[in-house]
Image (cartoon, rainbow, N blue to C red; front, side, top):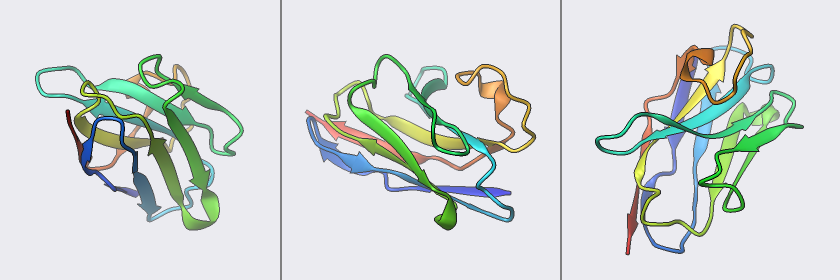
Length: 125
């Protein structure tokens, strides 16, 4: 299973970006998917989660109301839509899939066994 994150870039504070996570090598539609981010000097932190059906979504408090996650299983792709970006949002954003179905805490890095390479998001003030 390979995950490819894309869509990062430079945006002004208050602007929007739409990231993508495309999966190849296996059927994506049955994988719960999470997004995490790592800012310089900080630990990787949970951002958002979407169940494999797409009926359950969860967000970190820091992004709730600004970010929306969706998926298109026919395209094997997950899309985090990031609106109202703030100066504290810049980081490398990673998508991750729970391919083994281990379950558990959705905000726990260890739940996810397949990770993309990350895409950089930069916010200018």
